[in-house]
Length: 209
Length: 185
Ligand SMILES: [Zn+2]
Image (tube, rainbow over all chains, first blue to last red; front, side, top):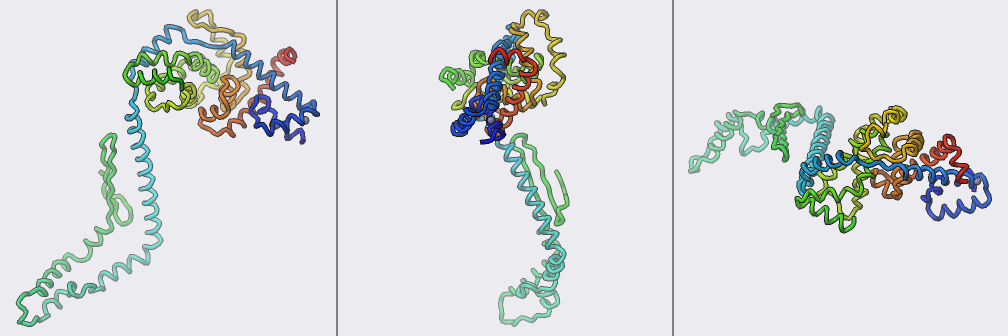
């Protein structure tokens, strides 16, 4: 093996952190390479020296300061296991929840921007042109002009017509706007704070409480 | 963690807060010394280890008792140290050493000023990451795996920084303390 490759292993080997197999290969190299042997020895010596320095340098707290610190610590209250768990999870849940809402929102926006130009006119055309449910969606005039056989004792169709009149008077618009509204309420378990968002079909804020 | 520590943790969590002191006393020098080696400033070192102990007390309930209590403390200390942003880390050792006069503060039982200066001179040449890894592995004797756990990193990353640190330390010792190399040869 080449010296350059061995050199990369030497620092780990000198501190006994090289895996056994590599260490054996390195030792085989060391047997016939004085330069690498010197390198190993020097790192070992430096490490031993530093450790010796370190052993002569242990710092301790001045007694009064340590006692003061311990008194301060004991005046605190340890958070109970469950408390800290409960504290940690909702925060995470909040983050995940917010990330999901954000991703969904962005995805919806993208989908909307892709689909919306052809889709919107089509949708409104369908709504305005379809007398879709003929049994219920006769126009007011048609409903009025229909003559019902006299022998039918109950007047379901006419009532139906009147129902349609109400529906038609209101028009298809309200139905459409309710579909295009989306509301979202986020409630913090920690603070009880409620955030209520209402978004219109263009995902613009309508309200924020 | 050993049984004695486990029992003390139990007591503290049960409300007997006075059990906290015997729990952490075996590590008080370690925490302060390590903080000092990281920050190279005694006031900052006190701040770091004080915050470490406060957090250890506060979050004792979340400590997993299958783990080593010592490593858990080291992990907290590393977090505290990092959260301080290593702010004064590069302000230079000399100024700090000049300001630190043991005679001015007789309460501080400080040993081996000369040795400390030598060690610090070498640590100065390492990057913060290299210093963390080097102190935990080569000075505190944690394994590579433990060091990785304490620093919340991978063993591979530890090995990389450790290798660099050892190469630098060899160069630094050789340049600044040639006598040491000769004496030990
Ligand atoms: Zn070689």
